Image (cartoon, rainbow, N blue to C red; front, side):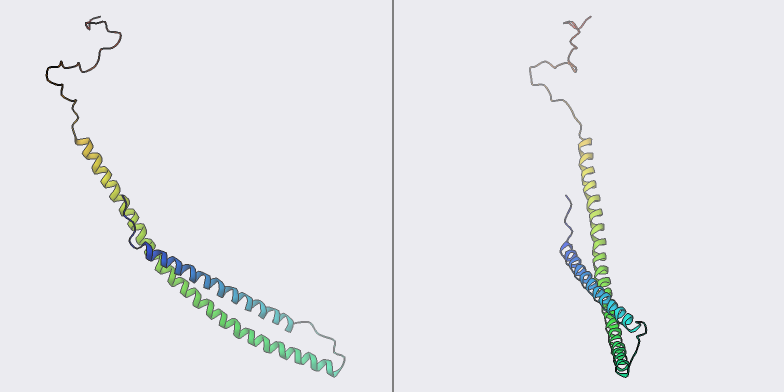
Length: 162
Protein backbone atom coordinates (compact mmCIF):
# COMPACT_ATOMS: atom_id res chain seq x y z
CA UNK A 1 0.00 0.00 0.00
CA UNK A 2 1.27 3.44 -0.88
CA UNK A 3 2.57 5.61 1.92
CA UNK A 4 1.10 9.08 2.21
CA UNK A 5 3.18 12.05 1.14
CA UNK A 6 4.86 13.29 4.31
CA UNK A 7 4.90 16.93 3.14
CA UNK A 8 1.21 17.04 2.22
CA UNK A 9 0.42 19.52 5.01
CA UNK A 10 3.16 21.87 3.87
CA UNK A 11 1.95 21.55 0.28
CA UNK A 12 -1.58 22.53 1.35
CA UNK A 13 -0.11 25.54 3.17
CA UNK A 14 1.85 26.55 0.05
CA UNK A 15 -1.29 26.25 -2.07
CA UNK A 16 -3.18 28.41 0.42
CA UNK A 17 -0.38 31.01 0.30
CA UNK A 18 -0.48 30.88 -3.49
CA UNK A 19 -4.25 31.42 -3.48
CA UNK A 20 -3.88 34.42 -1.16
CA UNK A 21 -1.15 35.88 -3.36
CA UNK A 22 -3.32 35.33 -6.45
CA UNK A 23 -6.20 37.16 -4.76
CA UNK A 24 -3.95 40.08 -3.87
CA UNK A 25 -2.63 40.18 -7.43
CA UNK A 26 -6.16 40.23 -8.84
CA UNK A 27 -7.11 43.00 -6.42
CA UNK A 28 -4.03 45.06 -7.34
CA UNK A 29 -4.74 44.60 -11.05
CA UNK A 30 -8.36 45.69 -10.48
CA UNK A 31 -7.23 48.86 -8.68
CA UNK A 32 -4.74 49.53 -11.47
CA UNK A 33 -7.50 49.22 -14.10
CA UNK A 34 -9.74 51.55 -12.09
CA UNK A 35 -6.98 54.17 -11.86
CA UNK A 36 -6.20 53.82 -15.57
CA UNK A 37 -9.90 54.23 -16.43
CA UNK A 38 -10.15 57.34 -14.24
CA UNK A 39 -7.02 58.78 -15.88
CA UNK A 40 -8.47 58.09 -19.34
CA UNK A 41 -11.74 59.82 -18.40
CA UNK A 42 -9.85 62.86 -17.10
CA UNK A 43 -7.74 62.94 -20.26
CA UNK A 44 -10.90 62.88 -22.40
CA UNK A 45 -12.32 65.77 -20.36
CA UNK A 46 -9.15 67.76 -20.94
CA UNK A 47 -9.21 66.98 -24.66
CA UNK A 48 -12.82 68.07 -25.15
CA UNK A 49 -13.40 70.17 -28.20
CA UNK A 50 -13.27 73.98 -28.27
CA UNK A 51 -15.90 75.87 -26.33
CA UNK A 52 -17.42 79.04 -27.70
CA UNK A 53 -16.25 81.69 -25.26
CA UNK A 54 -18.53 84.72 -25.14
CA UNK A 55 -17.11 86.79 -22.28
CA UNK A 56 -14.22 87.08 -19.83
CA UNK A 57 -16.04 85.17 -17.07
CA UNK A 58 -16.51 82.19 -19.33
CA UNK A 59 -12.84 82.33 -20.36
CA UNK A 60 -11.84 82.39 -16.72
CA UNK A 61 -14.13 79.39 -15.95
CA UNK A 62 -12.75 77.34 -18.87
CA UNK A 63 -9.16 78.13 -17.82
CA UNK A 64 -9.90 77.14 -14.21
CA UNK A 65 -11.58 73.95 -15.37
CA UNK A 66 -8.65 72.98 -17.55
CA UNK A 67 -6.16 73.79 -14.80
CA UNK A 68 -8.17 71.67 -12.37
CA UNK A 69 -8.34 68.83 -14.87
CA UNK A 70 -4.58 69.01 -15.43
CA UNK A 71 -4.01 68.87 -11.67
CA UNK A 72 -6.38 65.92 -11.39
CA UNK A 73 -4.60 64.24 -14.30
CA UNK A 74 -1.23 64.69 -12.56
CA UNK A 75 -2.68 63.16 -9.37
CA UNK A 76 -4.14 60.27 -11.35
CA UNK A 77 -0.75 59.72 -13.01
CA UNK A 78 0.82 59.44 -9.56
CA UNK A 79 -1.94 57.07 -8.39
CA UNK A 80 -1.52 54.96 -11.53
CA UNK A 81 2.24 54.72 -10.99
CA UNK A 82 1.72 53.71 -7.36
CA UNK A 83 -0.86 51.12 -8.38
CA UNK A 84 1.54 49.77 -11.03
CA UNK A 85 4.20 49.37 -8.35
CA UNK A 86 1.69 47.59 -6.09
CA UNK A 87 0.69 45.29 -8.95
CA UNK A 88 4.36 44.53 -9.66
CA UNK A 89 4.93 43.69 -5.99
CA UNK A 90 1.84 41.48 -5.95
CA UNK A 91 3.05 39.74 -9.13
CA UNK A 92 6.44 39.11 -7.51
CA UNK A 93 4.78 37.74 -4.34
CA UNK A 94 2.58 35.47 -6.43
CA UNK A 95 5.60 34.26 -8.41
CA UNK A 96 7.45 33.44 -5.20
CA UNK A 97 4.45 31.60 -3.74
CA UNK A 98 4.05 29.67 -6.99
CA UNK A 99 7.74 28.69 -7.03
CA UNK A 100 7.48 27.42 -3.45
CA UNK A 101 4.43 25.33 -4.35
CA UNK A 102 5.96 23.98 -7.57
CA UNK A 103 8.96 22.56 -5.72
CA UNK A 104 6.70 20.63 -3.36
CA UNK A 105 4.41 19.54 -6.20
CA UNK A 106 7.41 18.03 -7.98
CA UNK A 107 8.37 16.20 -4.79
CA UNK A 108 4.81 14.91 -4.46
CA UNK A 109 4.80 13.60 -8.03
CA UNK A 110 8.18 11.92 -7.50
CA UNK A 111 6.89 10.37 -4.28
CA UNK A 112 3.78 9.07 -6.06
CA UNK A 113 5.88 7.54 -8.84
CA UNK A 114 8.28 5.87 -6.40
CA UNK A 115 5.43 4.66 -4.22
CA UNK A 116 3.61 3.15 -7.22
CA UNK A 117 6.82 1.46 -8.36
CA UNK A 118 7.32 0.06 -4.87
CA UNK A 119 3.74 -1.27 -4.81
CA UNK A 120 4.20 -2.89 -8.22
CA UNK A 121 7.47 -4.45 -7.09
CA UNK A 122 5.83 -5.86 -3.94
CA UNK A 123 2.99 -7.26 -6.03
CA UNK A 124 5.44 -8.84 -8.48
CA UNK A 125 7.39 -10.43 -5.61
CA UNK A 126 4.16 -11.91 -4.25
CA UNK A 127 3.18 -13.23 -7.69
CA UNK A 128 6.66 -14.72 -8.19
CA UNK A 129 6.40 -16.42 -4.81
CA UNK A 130 3.04 -17.92 -5.72
CA UNK A 131 4.35 -19.05 -9.11
CA UNK A 132 7.39 -20.82 -7.64
CA UNK A 133 5.38 -22.90 -5.22
CA UNK A 134 4.81 -26.39 -6.62
CA UNK A 135 1.30 -27.70 -6.65
CA UNK A 136 0.67 -31.34 -5.87
CA UNK A 137 -2.66 -33.05 -5.33
CA UNK A 138 -3.32 -34.06 -1.76
CA UNK A 139 -2.02 -37.53 -0.85
CA UNK A 140 -4.74 -40.19 -0.42
CA UNK A 141 -5.50 -41.38 3.04
CA UNK A 142 -4.00 -44.70 4.09
CA UNK A 143 -6.00 -47.71 2.96
CA UNK A 144 -7.84 -45.97 0.13
CA UNK A 145 -7.38 -46.55 -3.55
CA UNK A 146 -5.67 -43.92 -5.61
CA UNK A 147 -8.24 -42.26 -7.88
CA UNK A 148 -7.44 -42.13 -11.58
CA UNK A 149 -5.87 -38.87 -12.73
CA UNK A 150 -8.92 -38.00 -14.80
CA UNK A 151 -12.44 -39.31 -14.32
CA UNK A 152 -13.70 -41.53 -17.16
CA UNK A 153 -15.75 -39.74 -19.73
CA UNK A 154 -19.49 -40.44 -19.63
CA UNK A 155 -19.39 -42.12 -23.05
CA UNK A 156 -16.85 -44.75 -21.90
CA UNK A 157 -18.57 -48.00 -20.81
CA UNK A 158 -17.73 -49.45 -17.42
CA UNK A 159 -14.43 -51.28 -17.48
CA UNK A 160 -12.81 -48.61 -19.69
CA UNK A 161 -13.01 -50.48 -23.01
CA UNK A 162 -15.01 -49.46 -26.00
